[in-house]
Length: 253
Ligand code: NJP
Image (tube, helix red, strand yellow):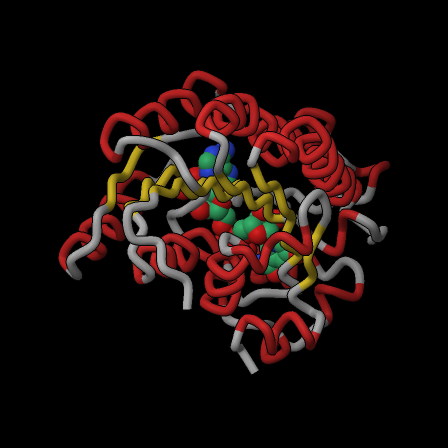
């Protein structure tokens, strides 16, 4: 079982879904956590619940598409909890789902701003600090879409391919400085994102029965598992939670 006592973690997109599950799981294993997202009422509520259960948690309003906001969130983690050990780059968008010829250029670009630039901004701020102390783990939430193509998802597939590339590049530059950068492709997860995908009716993912999706708590456990030495096998690449062996190793099945 992971032991994160004395460790600090920041999770972007912690207001619901996978990010919420991640932050609750990291806190369960003893980490002091910072919840970063735009829905401040939700992150304040979740942070309050974690504190009530005896954990350490702070909420910070953060639009990951804004570099200053990301810098501020990481600074808050360092000021309140004395450092940053684990960064989970989870915030992500898939809407609006549309084929290329029907897509809106501004909305397409907004997804890149959040899914790609948001990850880069957090890496830009966190990696030097982690390298300076010679330790730290970054988990970038990826997707099967990083290496696959799906109708209506050109924005999302392109963005996740870029996230995988950022995982590889960050590992190349910082892997020898004690910093572990890994990606996690969770498979399909029962969150609001899958509700939006279903509503779109586009491509085979929207046709899946919701019963096949895994609960976000499984992804929270996998994130915690990757934040231990178990994550070493996936430095500079994506770990797939569809993989039965990974599920077994995490203790999910
Ligand atoms: O999505 P959802 P998931 N700045 O919609 C936040 C990947 N993934 O949990 O700002 C900061 O329930 C938003 O917070 P708020 C997926 O690509 C999923 O399923 O308050 N935060 C909320 O907390 C994504 O990278 C599946 O609106 C921003 C969160 O992001 C990650 O998993 C499969 C933000 C989204 O919650 C979490 O997705 C897969 C911004 N500008 C990969 N914009 C799946 N669900 O099946 C959004 O392969 N957020």
